[in-house]
Length: 385
Image 1 (spheres, rainbow, N blue to C red):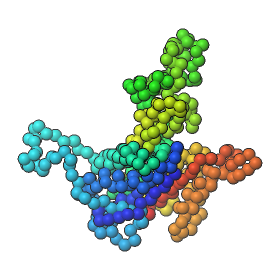
Image 2: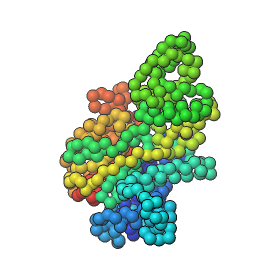
Image 3: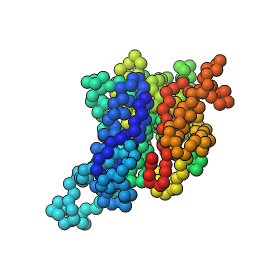
Image 4: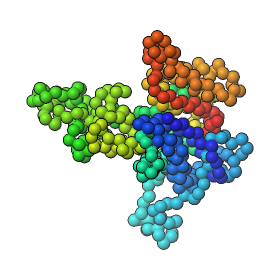
């Protein structure tokens, strides 16, 4: 598991960056992504930086020289944006007549979202191309946050989670991508490309494993185009192992992996077979946007990023309660108060060692997974510290 907070800067637009990577089947993909994804993001943002600078009212600290005491986690973006399609200025020879040419109005927010999506794709492609040369093992989930021009962009591929706690209110900033949440996408892909199943799996879902004695009988099922359940007559193909099997944290794609988005996993196969699982795993993140300038934020309003080791045992409400209890009891001038709050969350999720193992509140089982947590303050509208 790798955590990253960027601390590079140059002349241009200020951009803050945080990231969490939770590796599986080896640490290689997580290590590489933690070092290089930020550069792919910067490269993509540099293509649009002039558009963003020239079309937005920016805070004084976002343009030109950085003031003293610039936060250590800031990155600035430079380089003129180019319209790769080659469209010229109005009246130029390359500009088609108006009646033959219309252009969509693209919100700046969508340009940033597209830059993040493209960066994740490029990072995954680099891992694929270099995995043998550099022995890049396994895969990883990726949760990235950038603060750009007064907005937070949270990009998530995997089962880590981000939430904002503002005046005690919980604002979810990500979704978890698991075999259950992405059932319809996975089933549709298998339906369209049945060869990916290797003649060993069925794309249909049943409440339980179908047995041979049930041939010819009716059983509940659902397909990619269904949210509900219906009956079908069981056939020979239905006896194959289901594409998605199990429920909750035990749900797996092809009985192998429990997350459906992330980076890497290009060599992952079903056990004792030549069936690759990567076609079902997407590197595309979901990106959510939070406009910092729309709200007044106090010193105890925070953005929390954490891997599934925390969320497996603590709910959003429990985390929010812990934060709202912990931060007010800290010295407001203590520069480590947010780090201490993150440590407190880790300890709450791990629990206390008792006779029957690690236990948390109400004698529940503590987390046995890796846990990484960021607690990031949201302060003074469009400034993050």
